[in-house]
Amino acid sequence: DLVDTYPYSFEPHADLYGAFQPCKYSLHDLCLLLGVEPPKTDFDGSQVAQAVEEGRIEEVAQYCEGDAVATWHCHERVHTCLV
Image (cartoon, rainbow, N blue to C red; front, side, top):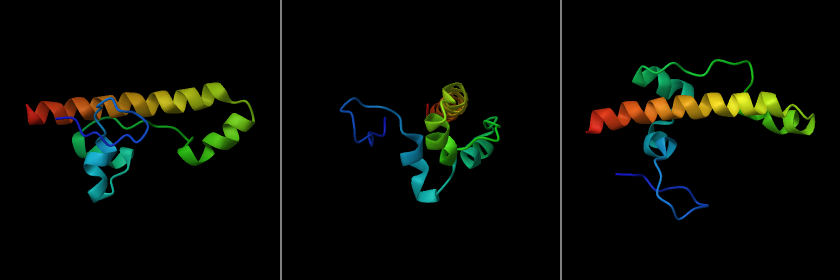
């Protein structure tokens, strides 16, 4: 079943952070735990606001895409284990 924890939508979705939050896993840790290649970059979430202010949108987009791809692979791994 989907974990519906997104506060800005009424559409169900899979929130891996919500599912693993009691364990306090970062996306990087979750990737390692599930055998998924973590997104590797020198850029992290704390730098997003500054990068947007400086117009470095492509760098932000690449960072977000890496997280989205890793999250999808983690979701696939968890879903496969539950089926």
